[in-house]
Image 1 (cartoon, rainbow, N blue to C red):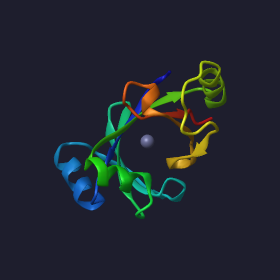
Image 2: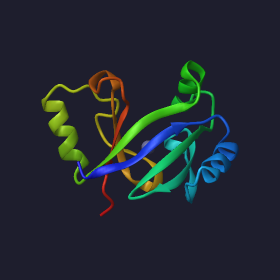
Image 3: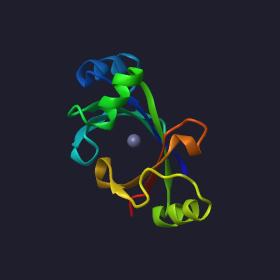
Image 4: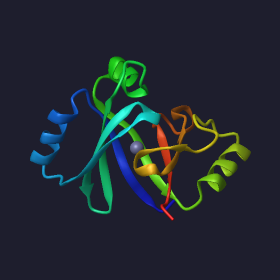
Length: 132
Ligand code: ZN
Protein backbone atom coordinates (compact mmCIF):
# COMPACT_ATOMS: atom_id res chain seq x y z
CA UNK A 1 0.00 0.00 0.00
CA UNK A 2 1.64 3.23 -1.12
CA UNK A 3 -0.91 5.83 -0.06
CA UNK A 4 -4.58 6.74 -0.05
CA UNK A 5 -5.00 7.75 -3.68
CA UNK A 6 -8.47 9.19 -3.37
CA UNK A 7 -11.80 9.10 -1.58
CA UNK A 8 -14.79 8.58 -3.88
CA UNK A 9 -18.00 10.50 -3.17
CA UNK A 10 -21.26 9.69 -4.98
CA UNK A 11 -23.18 12.79 -6.13
CA UNK A 12 -26.42 13.31 -8.03
CA UNK A 13 -25.37 16.58 -9.73
CA UNK A 14 -21.68 16.78 -10.63
CA UNK A 15 -21.81 20.46 -11.69
CA UNK A 16 -23.36 21.60 -8.41
CA UNK A 17 -21.14 19.31 -6.33
CA UNK A 18 -18.00 20.52 -8.17
CA UNK A 19 -18.90 24.13 -7.42
CA UNK A 20 -19.43 23.27 -3.77
CA UNK A 21 -16.08 21.47 -3.45
CA UNK A 22 -14.33 24.48 -4.97
CA UNK A 23 -16.13 26.71 -2.46
CA UNK A 24 -14.86 24.36 0.23
CA UNK A 25 -11.30 25.07 -0.95
CA UNK A 26 -10.44 22.01 -3.04
CA UNK A 27 -8.65 22.86 -6.31
CA UNK A 28 -10.22 21.34 -9.41
CA UNK A 29 -7.90 18.81 -11.04
CA UNK A 30 -9.92 17.55 -14.02
CA UNK A 31 -12.94 15.54 -15.04
CA UNK A 32 -13.69 12.67 -17.38
CA UNK A 33 -16.37 10.21 -18.36
CA UNK A 34 -15.51 6.59 -17.53
CA UNK A 35 -17.91 4.45 -19.56
CA UNK A 36 -16.50 1.20 -18.14
CA UNK A 37 -17.81 2.29 -14.71
CA UNK A 38 -20.93 4.19 -15.85
CA UNK A 39 -19.79 7.46 -14.29
CA UNK A 40 -18.57 10.95 -14.94
CA UNK A 41 -15.93 11.88 -12.39
CA UNK A 42 -14.32 15.12 -11.24
CA UNK A 43 -11.08 15.14 -9.26
CA UNK A 44 -10.06 17.70 -6.65
CA UNK A 45 -6.66 18.07 -5.07
CA UNK A 46 -6.08 17.26 -1.42
CA UNK A 47 -2.33 17.15 -0.72
CA UNK A 48 -0.91 14.00 -2.29
CA UNK A 49 -4.42 12.53 -2.46
CA UNK A 50 -7.59 13.47 -4.29
CA UNK A 51 -11.33 13.70 -3.78
CA UNK A 52 -13.23 11.98 -6.61
CA UNK A 53 -16.83 13.05 -7.16
CA UNK A 54 -18.84 10.45 -9.11
CA UNK A 55 -22.07 11.11 -10.99
CA UNK A 56 -23.85 8.19 -12.70
CA UNK A 57 -24.20 8.31 -16.51
CA UNK A 58 -27.16 5.90 -16.57
CA UNK A 59 -29.73 4.22 -14.29
CA UNK A 60 -27.88 0.88 -14.13
CA UNK A 61 -24.61 2.47 -13.03
CA UNK A 62 -23.40 1.20 -9.64
CA UNK A 63 -23.38 4.86 -8.54
CA UNK A 64 -27.05 5.28 -9.53
CA UNK A 65 -27.90 2.25 -7.39
CA UNK A 66 -25.82 3.58 -4.50
CA UNK A 67 -27.57 6.98 -4.67
CA UNK A 68 -31.02 5.36 -4.80
CA UNK A 69 -30.25 3.22 -1.77
CA UNK A 70 -28.19 5.53 0.41
CA UNK A 71 -28.18 9.03 -1.08
CA UNK A 72 -25.03 11.08 -1.74
CA UNK A 73 -21.95 10.38 0.37
CA UNK A 74 -18.70 8.49 0.68
CA UNK A 75 -18.75 5.62 -1.79
CA UNK A 76 -15.24 4.14 -1.70
CA UNK A 77 -11.68 4.44 -0.51
CA UNK A 78 -8.91 3.99 -3.07
CA UNK A 79 -5.36 2.93 -2.26
CA UNK A 80 -2.46 2.85 -4.68
CA UNK A 81 -0.51 -0.38 -5.11
CA UNK A 82 2.60 -1.10 -7.19
CA UNK A 83 1.38 -4.38 -8.68
CA UNK A 84 -2.36 -4.97 -8.84
CA UNK A 85 -2.00 -8.55 -10.15
CA UNK A 86 0.15 -9.45 -7.13
CA UNK A 87 -2.30 -7.79 -4.72
CA UNK A 88 -5.29 -9.64 -6.24
CA UNK A 89 -3.42 -12.96 -6.22
CA UNK A 90 -2.58 -12.42 -2.54
CA UNK A 91 -6.21 -11.58 -1.70
CA UNK A 92 -7.50 -14.61 -3.63
CA UNK A 93 -5.09 -16.87 -1.75
CA UNK A 94 -6.54 -15.51 1.50
CA UNK A 95 -10.15 -15.99 0.35
CA UNK A 96 -10.88 -12.25 0.43
CA UNK A 97 -14.12 -11.47 -1.42
CA UNK A 98 -13.48 -9.42 -4.58
CA UNK A 99 -15.89 -7.55 -6.84
CA UNK A 100 -13.27 -7.56 -9.63
CA UNK A 101 -11.15 -10.73 -9.58
CA UNK A 102 -9.22 -9.24 -12.51
CA UNK A 103 -8.23 -5.59 -13.04
CA UNK A 104 -10.62 -3.31 -14.95
CA UNK A 105 -10.02 0.11 -16.49
CA UNK A 106 -10.74 3.08 -14.23
CA UNK A 107 -10.34 6.86 -14.43
CA UNK A 108 -7.19 8.02 -16.19
CA UNK A 109 -6.86 4.62 -17.90
CA UNK A 110 -5.45 3.14 -14.69
CA UNK A 111 -5.92 -0.51 -13.83
CA UNK A 112 -8.23 -0.83 -10.81
CA UNK A 113 -10.12 -3.54 -8.91
CA UNK A 114 -12.74 -3.34 -6.17
CA UNK A 115 -12.77 -5.41 -2.99
CA UNK A 116 -16.21 -6.24 -1.58
CA UNK A 117 -17.30 -4.20 1.49
CA UNK A 118 -18.07 -7.50 3.25
CA UNK A 119 -14.32 -8.14 3.29
CA UNK A 120 -13.36 -4.70 4.63
CA UNK A 121 -15.69 -3.95 7.54
CA UNK A 122 -18.18 -2.13 5.33
CA UNK A 123 -15.97 0.05 3.12
CA UNK A 124 -15.81 -0.47 -0.64
CA UNK A 125 -12.05 -0.61 -1.31
CA UNK A 126 -10.55 0.25 -4.69
CA UNK A 127 -7.03 -0.86 -5.56
CA UNK A 128 -5.36 1.31 -8.18
CA UNK A 129 -2.12 0.33 -9.84
CA UNK A 130 0.54 2.99 -9.88
CA UNK A 131 1.04 4.44 -13.38
CA UNK A 132 4.24 3.04 -14.87
ZN1 ZN B 1 -12.20 5.76 -7.34
